Image (cartoon, rainbow, N blue to C red; front, side, top):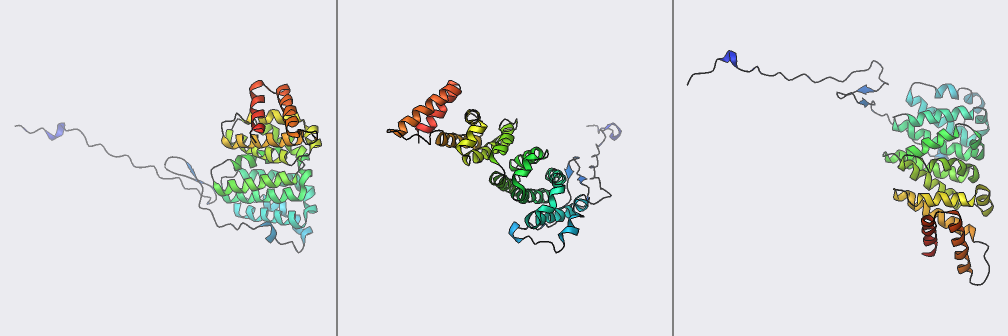
Length: 295
């Protein structure tokens, strides 16, 4: 058998060299891996200080003048330190933050959007202290809507320690801010296109409604609250549906609180049935009636 001429053999394919990651001249800038995905540099150790362990400033008047400049640093670790200083002011010298409060909230929103989890969490912790310090004043600021949306988004993400901190901040917000003002803002987000954001908004709304008095519900609109709850009962996420059921029970409890006739429970449920059938679609009304009657 004749041997094949080696000159006619197929050429051996050479493997293409793998693309090396691009190195940044600035160590603070993220790198690109071989698939061109953004890879943040390794996180440094950041101390998460509890609010009760934050110390006052020996000279707060001079320190507050440098705060905004320090928060504008390009060094994220210094920004974390400055956010902790913001927390110290909120806890011990809150009146000094009032003139720059809106600018501080812009910085906190920006930090929450940062891909660095440590910076994001520190900013969320600052939010909690700001909520406690300023409460109702925050609802008057334009940046409150951006701040609320970011907290809802961080509470619905996968990073557990960021998610848990955002949940804490949302609970602090509900306990610190005027319920009427807050409910007016949350109303937008219970219809958000992202189901996880919508679920977190539903939980905060439910917590807010559970703390409202009858006069507050009537001022906001008991029918509006009932309609929000009815819509959320059909949500795709269990967390939103459970929050909706809690809202139904809260509204029912306040709606019928003054029934004092004999056969009180029966009269309550009849009044509730008339209320639901008058203000909701037939299917939603039946769902709301069933929740109350099953108790």
